[in-house]
Length: 140
Image 1: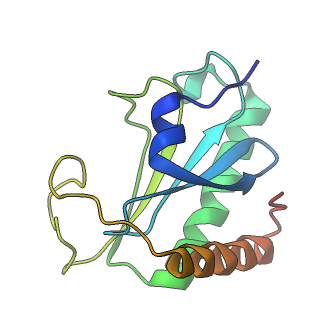
Image 2 (image 1 turned 90 degrees about the horizontal axis):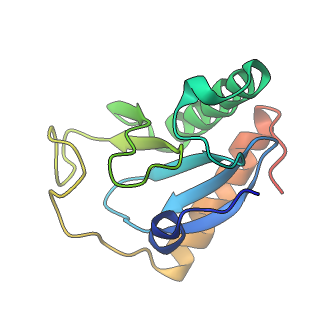
């Protein structure tokens, strides 16, 4: 049975669920940072997903990427499934800007996380829901 890793649970806000994945917002407002977590138990790497699930994950990532670029126009969109600290398969989508707090270094361990206000979080989630719907994703 699928259960979200406790670190992901603690460090994110749940936006909703897609066909394959749970969509999460990192609580670190230094960068627009979303995470897809396939709802499959015991999966640590993309190659462990079924062919259909791999295809769906790529589609969800594609739509999420389009939404982030549309909303934030980043200089670079970092997409990664690193998993050194959290073994559960999860795919980061992080908007990076030449003037962000860590540019050009990786975001991990570089700066103190900055919290979203309730209004910022609600606005971001509302805008994101609209953008992913334009791509045809159903977010429940």
